[in-house]
Each structure stands twice: as structure tokens, then as C-alpha cells.
Length: 277
Image (cartoon, rainbow, N blue to C red; front, side, top):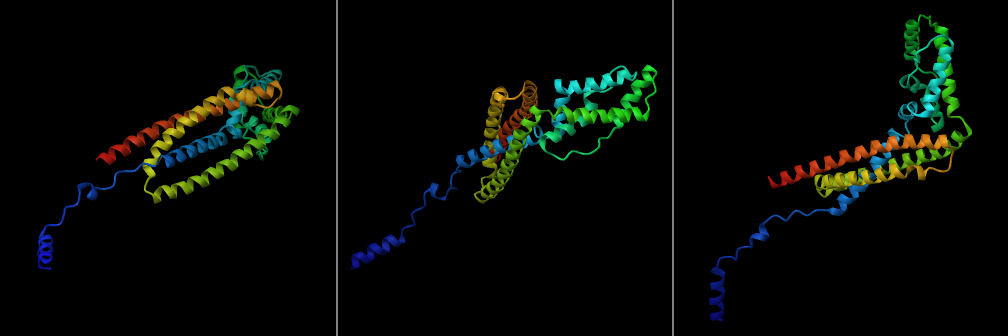
């Protein structure tokens, strides 16, 4: 017993074994690649859905594209021919002037409620200015008649049987895009709360943006070249118009993807530098 007691006192007098440095060191930073990949998918879905909503499925944007296409130019030429028959030469009606009237017809195509009237000031000013140039008086009755003719032509252009048939599919695609956007927003909100709870907001945002932007650019480029083959069988005019508008919107989406790649890389660089400091 005495020997055991002496050994116990001896060991009790020994200094405590120091903890290993790695036990006191902060836990190494753990990445969450799965969260970053999920953010990339959300970025892809959000960019495509919101991009389509503000471009392809936006009557004003689409009217701007259509006004520069063969369909829009046909309407513009008819209006200028009408003015020429009234003595106003020089083609005062341009793409920009015709755009609001075309937007009415496109809103009808999309199933939206179009405004009943369009501000005729720009059209009236263009006609009056050109009329003075050629020495003709442009009365209010003339400009009002041309404005009504523009609305009539625009609506008739998008009321053909081929356009009406395509309108049903376009409206379905627009509705699907809207609900996918709503679902993406809800998933994004849940993901933001989760990222804050695990303290991986910036760590996942940078890689997610960069990867999501890359996926957006890839999907957009594929859609840009494959779009004509994805359009259901329709008339040549409808196919050409949908391709023109669709490619214009996809180009915007691809550009947005490139911006997201740059932002993602900048966030990753800033986060890495901040962690080192």
C-alpha cells in the first residue's frame, strides 16, 4: 500500500500532459461542394426563367425585335405606303415608332390585356415633320387615321391562323416559365436560410454563381443553335419570327451567364483573400 501511495503522490506531482497543438487549433475550414452545386442549379434556373420573362415573354421587348424583322418591316412599309399615297414621302414611320403598335398585337398573341390606346405623339410628330419637309400639311385627322391603321395592321398581323395556333403553345410556355420562376424563388429563399444557418453563405455563393453562370452559358448556347429544330411545325413566317425573338432573348441570357461567371470568380477571390487575412 505504501508503495502504491508513493507512486500516486509521484504521479500527482507531475505536470499535466500538454494538449497537442492540433487539439487547440481551430477546426479546418470545411467546404460544402454539394451546397455550391445546388446554388449553381438555382442560378441556372433563375437566370433562364427571369431572362425569358423579361425578353421573350415581354410584349414590349418582343415588339422591339419584331419591328426590325421582316414581319415588322412589312407593317412599317404598309404604313409608309399609305402616307405616300397621301403625299407624305420619305418613310417617316420607323421601327421605333411602330414598336408600341406592334406591342399591342403581341400582347394579344401572349394572352395579355393590351392597352386600348397608344400615345400617338411620336407618330404625329414624325408625320408632321416629314410633311413640312415635302411641303404638305399633315392634319390631325390624317395622323389619327394613320395611328388607327397602325393598330389595325399590328393586330391583324398576329391574328392569322398560323399565329393563333402558335399563340396557344406560346401561352403554355409562358405559364410554365412563370410557375418555374415562382418555384425557383421559393427554393432560393429556403437555400438562403440554410446557408446562413451553416455559415456558408459566401463560401457557396462564389462557386455557385461561377458554375451556374457557366451552365447558363452552355445551355443558352445549345438553345441558340438548336432553337429552330425545337420549334413545333408551323408556317415559315411563324418559325422565322419565333427563331428571331427566341435567339434575341437567349443572347441576353448568355450574356447574363457570362456576368455571373465573373461575379462568382470575384466573390471567390475576395472570400479567399479575406480568409487568409
